[in-house]
Length: 152
Image: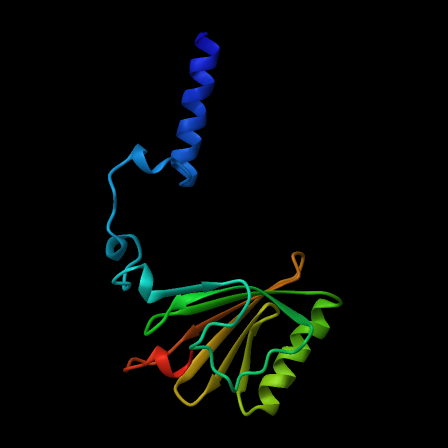
């Protein structure tokens, strides 16, 4: 019986460490504190099916990339998109860089796995994961009003 209690305690400790503990395990944290900058969960977007509504329509995503997840604030804040790709990683980097340049985005290679794209005041950081064949795009929009209703 002691072994069973010890295993249950370890399981609960592990759940607390990785954040999967039951809701009753601790005090409830308001959404605004859980995610800085978001007034409530209604102010956030998360989808595996479509790009974030604030993601620039003029930034091309080549067909080699398949959307895995899109998340961020609806009205303000950073936007993050995760993609997977098949094939040669170098070809994926070149496809994204060339597509963005042809759409008027300037690019700067910071390393073999990180590109920075800019157009006007907008900046998109691209992070490639070569063994995992993944791409993460982080968009940091300039400060200013944004209305999500125009994009949905």
